[in-house]
Image (cartoon, rainbow, N blue to C red):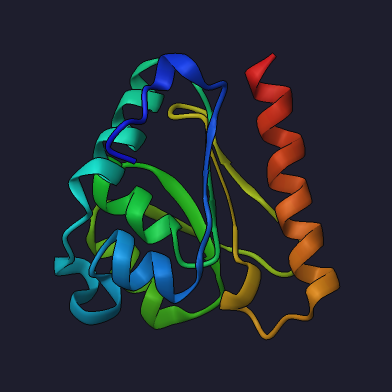
Length: 139
């Protein structure tokens, strides 16, 4: 991520899971008081500033919320996590399997993936929907 340049890419997608919550930021340990890895923060900010789309899966919308603040995202239906995201200044939209939320201002596309009790087919549907929307936006 330290070498990332938004000019070299059409979009960026941040995967979820514990890696995102523990390594890309400290949300797993600190919730809304988390810190985002500076290289990840820079990648998100410069991609948005370049007018290019950003995708975030599973728990990684928490990173987007911390970096951008007044962005609209989803992590599914977990009230505690949604409340934490909203306490960072973001708006959370409750969703279910395969659904995406698009923030038009920032060109951010999110889906809950394993933040819901999901199977691999449902995860694939959500991730595919994010990619399809990002490709549409990036045109």
